[in-house]
Length: 261
Ligand SMILES: O=C(O)CCC(=O)C(=O)O
Image (cartoon, rainbow, N blue to C red; front, side, top):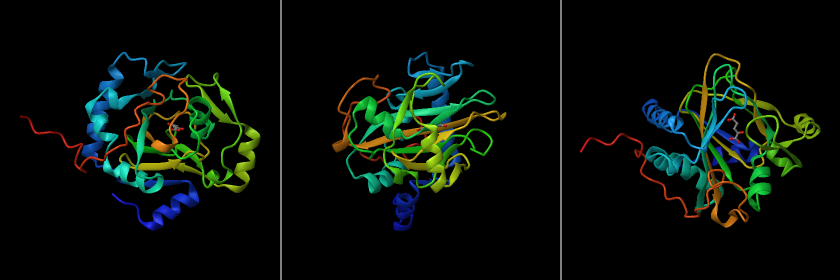
C-alpha cells in the first residue's frame, strides 16, 4: 500500500498520520487471538502495571508468536514506512500496549527518540512508530495525545523517569511541554479498531490513564533505517532487537488464516 503525496506532505507537516480502516475486523480478530496467547505466557517481556499487576506492555512479540512474525512484515505497515524512512528498515521493537479498563496508567510526555538515543545510541531521529488499534480508541479510554507539529522542535532535553510508572521513560519536562503547547495544537488520536497511526521519533506525545470501563489495546511496531542502527547495547533485546536484516514485506493477505492441510 502506498501513501499519496498529499498524505506524505501531511506527515511532514503534522508529524503523524491516522489511517482509518487499514485492517479489517477479521484481521483484528486474528491479531487479538495472538495477543491473548502471548499475554498468557509467563515471560519477562510481559511488563505489568505497578499497582494492578495487569499487563501494561508485552514486547518481543514477533519472536513469540507466528502471527506477529507476519504482522511485522505486513505491506500495509512496511510500504508506507519505506516511503517515509527508506527501503532498508529493521525491526527495532514490537509490542502491544494495553490500558485495562479502570486501571491502565498514563504514559508521560515524551519523544521516542530520547529513549532510542540515550539507551541504545541511535544517532538520528529517523525511526517510525507504526500503531494498529486493537480496540476502538475513544477520547475516554486512554488515547495517545499528540502535539501536532511538535517534531519541529527537534530532539528536546529529557529526564529519565523511573518512578511514575512500571516502565522507565525519558520524559519531556513540564516547562518544555508548556512552550510546545503555545505553538502546537493538542489532538487525541482516536478511531475504530483497525485504524493505524504512523508517527515520527521527535513527535511529543503521551497518554492519560484509562478510567473508563473499556479496555484499550494498541499494537506498536518501531522500525528504524539499518544505516541509523543502535550503537550500544544496554537493554534487553525485547526493548531493541539487534537483528539488522532489512524487512521484506509479505503479501497483502498474509494474516488470513491458513486452510487446514
Ligand atoms: O500506548 C500508549 O498509550 C503510549 C504509547 C507510546 O507512547 C509509544 O508507543 O511511544
